[in-house]
Amino acid sequence: MLQSLKNPEKFNNSSCFAEGWYWLLESRQLRSGQVQPVSVLGRNLALYRTAAGHPIALDAYCPHMGAHLAEGRVEGEGLRCFFHNWKFNAQGNCVEIPCLGKSLPVGVKSWPLQEAYGLIWIWISDQPRQPLPIPPELATVAVDTWVSKRFTKACHPNVVMVNAIDAHHFNTVHNFPIAIDFQSETIGPHCISFKNQTKGGKEAWLMQLIHPLYKERGTYDLCYWNGSTGTVTLGPDFLHFYIMFSLRMLENGQTEGATVLMTQRRTGLFGWLFNRIILGITALVGHYFAQGDTQVFRSIRFNLKTPLGADRSILEFIDHFEQQSTRTWGSWEPWQPQTAPPTDPAPPSLGSQSPLPAPTHPSGKPPCLTLSAPP
Image (tube, rainbow, N blue to C red):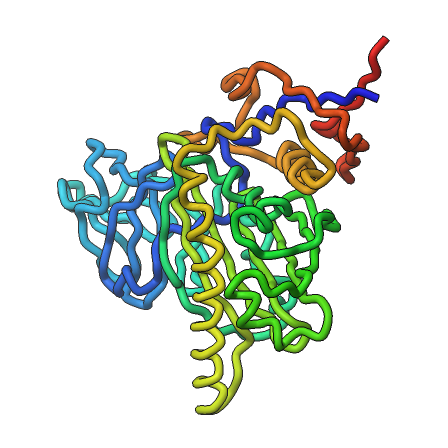
């Protein structure tokens, strides 16, 4: 039976992104009383920290003459524009116009923020509809974190995301053996997980380092939110390592990302020292996988023309992303397909080597995989 892959509209499309949580800045980069200009997903913001220590994100431009509010100064819980001293509160409402001696019913948009894992996060919509991403195993415990590094990749965030569930490339690029088949589970409309196992081979130096910790096979689980933030759970049963990579799209369709290392918080001096060691090992693990893919991301033009059975997880991720609520680059308004044609107008054909059934989706919407038989 011949199969075809319906061309995705949202996946790998630089005109839209999934609604969800996106990181703005490292917490340590914004001190109390400080304001900074931030540009994310095509929108300019003024990000400041109030006297009480709360981060606030407002649309950047003053409604009076369009001065950038990041040129102003923080006063208590509000922000005063540098140009004519109009003051706005944390909700973005104008509360004082000195030359009038009163305020006017005008303002700027204020966006929902959370601060966690050493980062400041923004929700791209009016009200958050989901919690911040977290490795499922750490969802109910306190965690210690370390923002390892920020990076850029010369391809779309969706392409970076599917790399972690590309089973074949672990053998070819990283010399790191894992099982070919991922087991997927849809957690919700904006979250999907994939589970796998490492085989415990000794080909790579990383496997040689951690192989004595394995009795048989180890865990390799991923959880993806909004097609842009993923968590990796890796290691033997008694000691898992956790890595979060959170991505956001740049104007040219490329990727900027932040890596957060995580572990369960342990008490006491010994617990603190032990966690520093665990986070250090986690950094080595993350660096091992990241360096091998760098050259691929410099030149890749993603186009899955001939999916094989081992690519099933990638197709499931694409299908799940196609069902998500998306926003338009720059305006952050709901995205409409007619405003942005697909990035590749030619529907790729599937090879007949390994037939793939069409995945289903709990929303009832048609999946991006379709089957067709020749006459």
